[in-house]
Image (cartoon, rainbow, N blue to C red):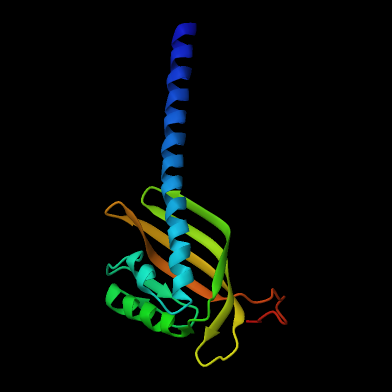
Length: 169
């Protein structure tokens, strides 16, 4: 009886260790991808969407709810939106720092929730570089073995405020 219990515990322990290794392997490939993704984002805010688009899903279920408002669905619309959004930035030597609040991987899906702090950016006709911070949620999917951006939702980071009045029915 004792040998059977020990055998079951040993098998369970081996199973748990195998699961941990698989999770870590998935996380490490996602973490490596995120470093490349940050480079794509840095280029994007200097007016170059090339690397961003190479790391984005080009399928019909790709979506964006971008920081410039509106939304797009499907690569034909999303790809054009990436070009347009990146063209709003002028090359100014802008830098970006990503502060991850949360991230995770489950199977072929990964996500990040972050604050993106852009420094020395020039948007549109601005002559003087400025700072910009965005709240960003992104969903990534493995496609043909490579992580790709599937969905992005970004909006300007605002100071937290309590509601001035509670809506009444």
